[in-house]
Image 1: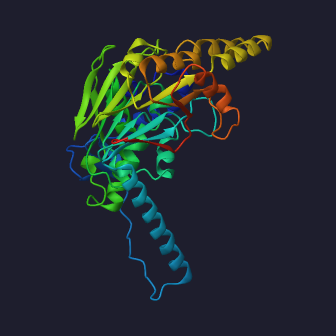
Image 2: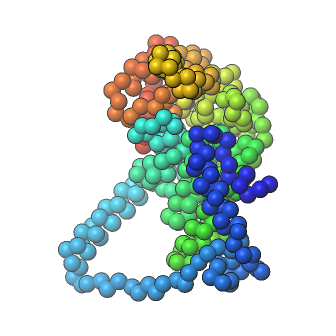
Image 3: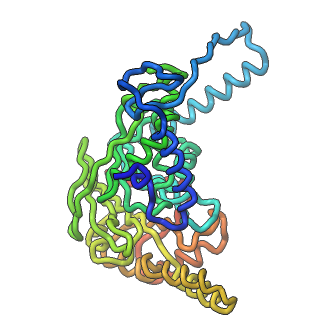
Length: 397
């Protein structure tokens, strides 16, 4: 398969970005070949597993002179660093509790611009950090929320729309830079290898520079990469795709046509469960997978707002945007349909994410547009998720 094909995402709205990535990969592919994959330099190049990469000599790095007693600036810097480390340690301890499942909605937006990061849901269970999707802005959102990025255990992709995969490369890269010590598994449907291979190609030069600069003891190159794990079609009934330390993840097919494959996931630990819907209409598979779920993290669409937008574009003579809005309505779950599904499944708590259309986190209309129509038909708790919000499912609750 041509290397440009490996990184092409099937989303016309992102073609300019994909084209730039393709050019970057082609530029690397055009470099002279190495005779071996050792660390030997070839005419200013560094030979790596990815082939020849441009490099320069590592600059000298003398240690800083630390005054004793420290200067006011040095004392302030140390104070800030201690506070940041203490906050990060406290956050990690809270998230990695063994007596609860904790979910962080690290990205609740869509491709429609808002201050929300794109799709991202982090699930912590029995010390494991499982990440579901990583759209644009997801990695920074997680770092701002003090998630322990170096300890991410696995990534699961619901599908390959750009707003669900755009930041996977940053998750792989930053988790390694911050101290990840094992290769990162990325689970997804048919085509996941193309995503992972493309990321490896695009980040190869950056990974090489950082190892050369800081040393293999700080940034070992053998764990910089992600590793693709293809999920075979799980069907509507679903199938187990991950099991570790008593935590299981089951994938099930959802409907996001024409996008395929498209999955939802159910995470279970110690008798408790969390379901991540992925992008979908109201399917029997989502209803069945959500039965008795303590927490359903579900995408949602306001059909009323989109229909009003379509009618507005028609009056404005904007046929292109009218058709885009019309088509969007065909593959997301509407508020009323989600309410009926969640009630039928006996869901305990419903958290709304991937808001269509996306609105800012502090928009005062968000509850009336998305949550109130659901409350009319769903007897459980409904929350419109915000970026960085945490939801805890106690094991003994």
